[in-house]
Length: 265
Image 1 (cartoon, rainbow, N blue to C red):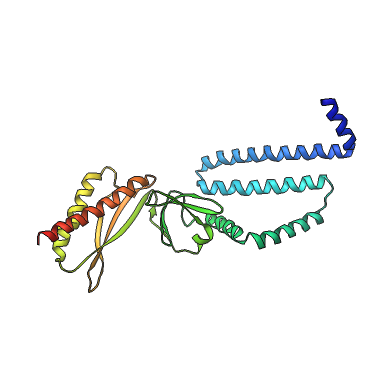
Image 2: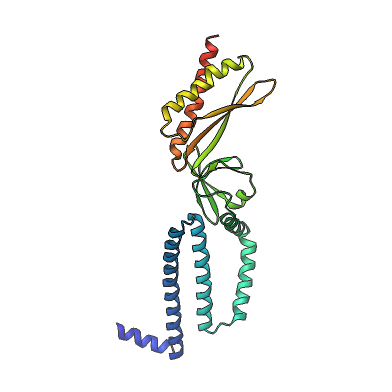
């Protein structure tokens, strides 16, 4: 079988063509090995300098693109395709991408910009437009958010850049506030003493081993219809399932105390 294969190759390939094919295969193997070595070296270096995960991934992507382009150019030159031919193909390919993949290219460029400018990092708790949650991953096309409904939402990076971004994270702590409103039919002091303060006190006593500090509150808005309070709580990052369960618990306790206060009138 091997002799038949060699006979066929001898008939099909000249010595020059066989040499070019061998060189191309060597270049391809070198590119694959080089990519792996570069990625492993970058991984070790990133751990040494504690480089952010998403920034590490962006560098790996850029280096892979460079290796692929250099390898492709080298292989094309081995087979006798000059720089003019490569430029023509690149221009044609660029035009095709421009017409057919505008959205994809836009997301890619937006992703690179997000990785460089870093308005938020992986594990930060953010609000992007009307979407809120923990940043799980930043890719060149999408930003993945773990929402309070326990789902992963992928937001196109162009939409991320077009949105107002609110980052609740401060170091390893989430500094989060939510609002709750009440009508004017209950005195302010009774509302604070009977509903808000007891709920916050009970919440802090129950979870003080987990909370970085005691929750705080303050009145944030008042109009002819009622008053609005802002409840400020701090949670550690990287444990969002607990956060998503505890914040509604505090809100629910305040509401229950409010209902009890109304029924006693």
